[in-house]
Amino acid sequence: MENSKTIESLIELGLDRQEAEIYLYLTKVGSNKKDNTAFAVGKNLSIPRSSVYLYIERLIKKELISPYTINNKKHFLAENPMRIEKSLDKKREIFKSILSDIKNLAENQETNFATRTYRGNGSLEKVYDEMFDKNEMTKYKDIYVLTNTLLSKLLPPNLPTKLDEIKKQNKIYTKMILIPDKSELGSYFKSDAFREVRTLPEGSVFQGSLYIYGDKIALFSLDKKDPISMIIESKTIVQMIKSFFLCTWELLGNGNI
Image 1 (cartoon, rainbow, N blue to C red):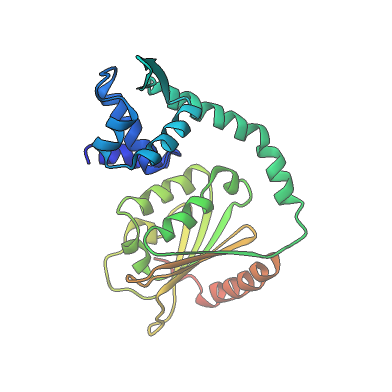
Image 2 (image 1 turned 135 degrees about the vertical axis):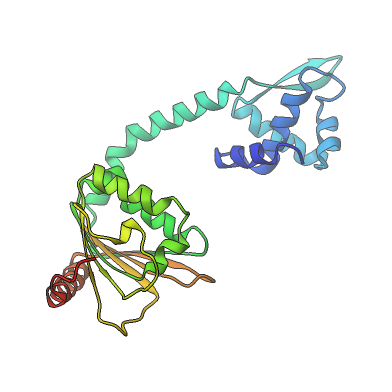
């Protein structure tokens, strides 16, 4: 169908596929009374008529289309697309009004352990999105990294450089341990004012990455066919892994890159 990108975007904004298709169709036909009936919608979009009414009712409740009657026959008009923006603004205000309550619930929870696992394409980016969230970055100023340089090859081309800039802007310092790698290293794997890099001895091999930040650990399995990412939230586990990291760091001396 035409406008596939627009439909996917409307789905991201909260409509289901049929609602998005109907809204765009009614936007296109406008007030043409031959094409803006439920029958015409179902026929042109290959949606059963009984289902068309269900989707139309949903769109009416969302104030994205309006019904009107001519000669006892119902017709439907798509509302101005600015209604979608207003709806998003309204939802944003509602969310802001409850955000502090949600945060308080999270901060006062009794459990001190949680894990989240992501799998497949995009799983690494999800973890980075959380790690470098503005609110999250207020909780730490140091990151401890043990990584294979293969990590950069599994990320979108510009993401490592973008994350580097975010760390510099927020004055976050990184201690990074790399496995030996003869390939050309990107700047994000080299020491600078906000990062010190040391290398493991020759023969050290693993296809993964570990990040320690605040009271959390991020783990990445760097399998191109099945990438897996995990976040572990536990002060006890973080303290243990961080101690091992710092011990290894000292044993490696000043082998900076």
